[in-house]
Image (cartoon, rainbow, N blue to C red; front, side):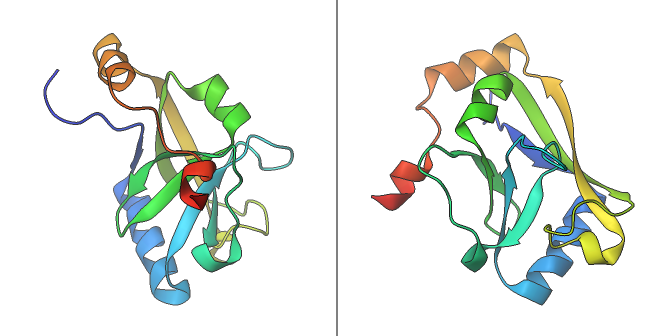
Length: 134
C-alpha cells in the first residue's frame, strides 16, 4: 500500500461546521470517550478548555491542526477501526461546541483493511497524553 494511512477523517459537511467553530472559538480538538450519555459521539472543545489525560491516544489530525483524541480504553476497542467525523441535524449533548447550532458530530466507522493495518502496525505507536506532557 502506498501513501500515508490515517485512522480518522472528516466529511465535507463536518469540515464546514469545524471551520465555523474554529472561527468562533479559536483552536479546537475532538475527544472520543465512549462514556455514558453521548459517549459514542465525538465531542468538540476549545483546546484551552480541555485537558488531555495521560492515557488518551492521539488518533490523528484533521484540518486546521485539529487533533482527534480518544480515551485509552476506547482506543483498545476501536484500534482496528477507521473513524470518519460527520455531522447531522439534531442536538447532541450540551457539552460539545456544535450543540447550540442544532447539529451534532457523529462517527461513521469501518474496519481498517489488512493493508492499512499492516502499515499502521509497522509504524510507530500513536502518541498518548503522556507524550504531550513531556
